[in-house]
Image: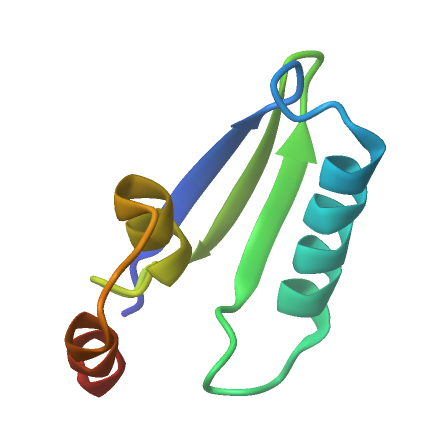
Length: 84
């Protein structure tokens, strides 16, 4: 049984056109891809304030969050991340 992860994106913080197109593109890729290396999107919906995505959960699988947290990571951490 797979576990789902919910991502919630605040529309007010990400209302620029480039951000909207980024989320649209990401949603479309995850919804249509049939590849073990791309996270499967199961549901996507929105309300007036947020966009919600329900996708497969992969523990430790969010490199973008790691980069946002530290702004820079050394090559050793990249290799460890990739191996896991």
